[in-house]
Amino acid sequence: MAQPVRREIRFILNGETVTLPDVKPDELLLDFLRLRRSLRGSKEGCAEGDCGACTVLVGRLTGGELVYESVNACIRFLGSLDGCHVVTVEHLRGENGGLHPVQQALVDFHGSQCGFCTPGFVMSLYVLWMREPSPSDARIEKALQGNLCRCTGYESIMRAARAISSYGEAGRDLLAKERTDIAARLAALKDGARVEIGSGKNRLIVPASVDDFAEIYAAEPAATVVAGSTDVGLSVTKQMRDISPVIFIGGLEELQTITEHQDGIRIGAGVSYTQARDFLAARVPALGALVDRIGGEQVRNMGTIGGNIANGSPIGDTPPPLIALGASVTLRHGNVRRCIPLEDFFIAYGKQDRAPGEFVESVHVPLPAPDAHFAVHKISKRRDEDITAALGAFNVQVREGRVAAARIAYGGMAATPKRARAVEQALIGQPWTEETIVAAQAAYATDYTPLTDMRATAEYRLLAAKNLLLRFYLETTSAAKPFRVKRCEEA
Image (cartoon, rainbow, N blue to C red):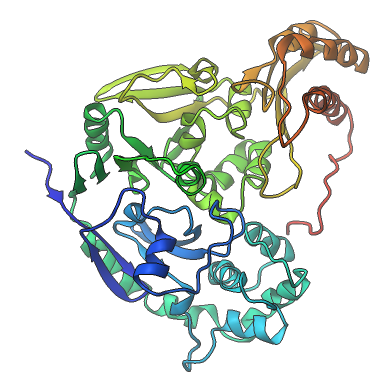
């Protein structure tokens, strides 16, 4: 039976059902809102998903439940929104038609000066308030990691965030009241059809299923595959690249499953950082802590584990710890699958072991052994929402005072995420002592020849990598909790 095809995308914008037959593959949501709909509350501050001035909410039916998340409209492609509910700051209002509780709190607590960033803060606080009407300071700060402000110093925004529920009840909010109706309208938009718009190279495609995606990509291996667009979005806004034709896979629920098996965890390639965070934190706490430092909340809502692997970046945050855990990746071309160790997937800078038309379908991650010490340490200029300069992942088993096994991997130290094999060999069989660590540090020069760039010098990276090993040793041999600089303790 032939796959039905629809020549338009359909979504709900605030309260209106929008049908668009004229969407360019690289058209961005922010441009659509401001230029085609005159909804100018969302601003372009950075065009790279960093400042949060463009923040809007996107609701999607997931497992039958309507879930809203904050996203960066400046790097979110319009073609990815088929079957979604987009909510902008213009949709907010109070029960009596006045200011929304989030807006009123920001006014009363002087949370805005120039006002450029304010709509983004409103939307980030809005989605947090809907989920947690009385959030802790730690939760507020986490929700605002992806929002930058030049004027207010943040403390007035924090005071406003603490007070929102004194202005209204989340259960009486407009989105709460209309949730059932919006969910029904979104369900009605789901017709099981593939979306194809445009012709020739200038096309966008939204597959109906993973099988449909596999068929399309096998036939169109030169197409750009977009899941969360946190990487591809910048190639359009900053590098002005032509990414056509584009296949949007962010709505494929089949790729968004994460499950635990006897031999480890299986993560679908479309699982976002947000979707993975609590699941991983409960089983491998160091991975949960790492996810909290990947971008801001908006980026974590959009970015995917599979995308972080597939783009092959040497500074991707998830490959080093997954390599240290011995992860493998399942690649698919049409109906043919193959599984390889994740460390073998990365061949050279910009080159992966992936044939044309083949895509990352899932990653399998063994859990650390019961007697293993496992840790991940990220070095960046800012603690939150910053790109990695160097990242070390350590998986070491110590038995009877000696190193029985070691897997150590780094990002930011080579052209690809890379094992520190010489360091591992210098540790295995040796006593787990500081003397062994200091001796093993010399092996880093064998494993890595890092580069100097805007984030760090080669000398700094090499020294930091050595010191991360020492830090890891000290943490494993001390009863004290590892020290972290933070303003608020998570409740």
